[in-house]
Length: 157
Image 1 (spheres, rainbow, N blue to C red):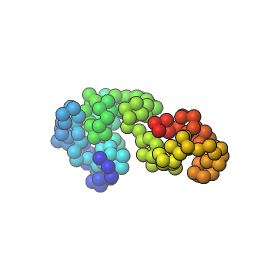
Image 2: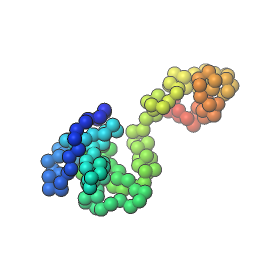
Image 3: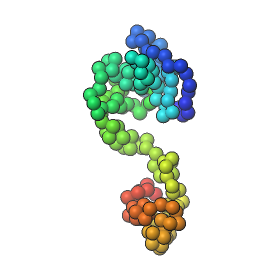
Image 4: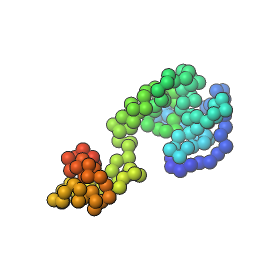
């Protein structure tokens, strides 16, 4: 889900949680009437604080996560609040899961990318210019050019 759906946050009561989700074919409890943040995650109020709905479900079922731990989705469905699809892990492990499952923005899909795939192909395969000349031409650091040429950055091209 993209964009921001603006709704008044509604506290979720344990006995009425099932009113707020539909079960899909994968067993995900898909949140249907919560506030959805800009990243596509449902949020709710808990003890006068806004929190991710998945974290609220975790806290309600298993207690507060230990410091440094985050609630992860095994199903990759941001709207899912099924406790069986939730687990704890570090933020680093969560990011690693995202990368391994191919859900990270790569290359030109990364909103912070300064280079296009066309630029990278030129740098990797058609340029005999020095790293510093290419860096000035494309407005990036020479180390960026070097890492592209070595196949470390933009390795999918």
